[in-house]
Length: 184
Image (spheres, helix red, strand yellow):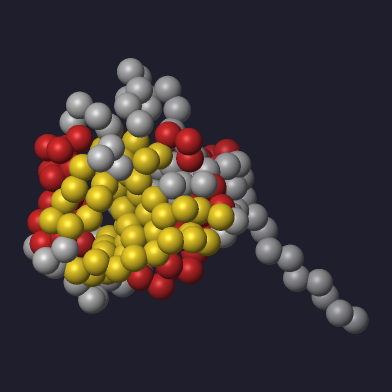
């Protein structure tokens, strides 16, 4: 006799209910992606420092033009609510208090990747492309480079670019940054 094994996928509502009743511990970090719950790695000082640097830099440049969200959910659909390291969002009067940002609210997502590089490339990047997120950067700490992904189509991006220190990078809203200011 053969037993059929099925994977149990969860909705965003079920995911929040699990957190509410204590199945998902508030001291641990999780993401819901395509119905699967991923336990996120602890944040080391290098990762945290890059998030803080980028947050400070982007807020200084875009404070009047965008909202910078740090490690907060983006509601992709009923089965996915990732928490990118940084999301540059369209400004709204309610600052996303009334609801989580959705793909159409996102101008740019930035993932800081060291231990999470494979997960960011193979799991999150296709999700962002499928959702129509216009631009994603992966700050690859292992190679001191920024991987830029633009022009989403299905589960991939049509335009990719890798930039390193000494180069400039265009950010949404017509501004440029020195890569060295991002990487350090």
